[in-house]
Image 1 (cartoon, helix red, strand yellow):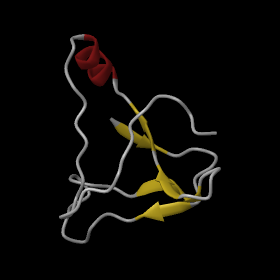
Image 2 (tube, one colour):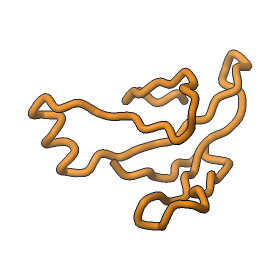
Image 3 (cartoon, one colour):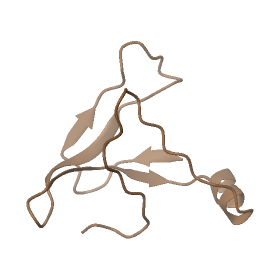
Image 4 (tube, one colour):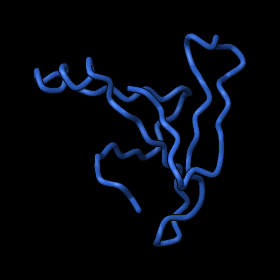
Length: 81
């Protein structure tokens, strides 16, 4: 999956200093309240051709969280805007 910028993005998370550019890159996100006032961070990802082929074969999608905790997360194809 490739992280992509989008019109509503308003913040950039830099990669951890302990990681190389090959391991991780900066991430453009929307950071602010959602329509209900709940703080959210939203990023947009575009599947590659290989990702689409894997999904079509029934393979799963993995979510990696760097850190020791697990915040509530959601993965979807529906735009929040």
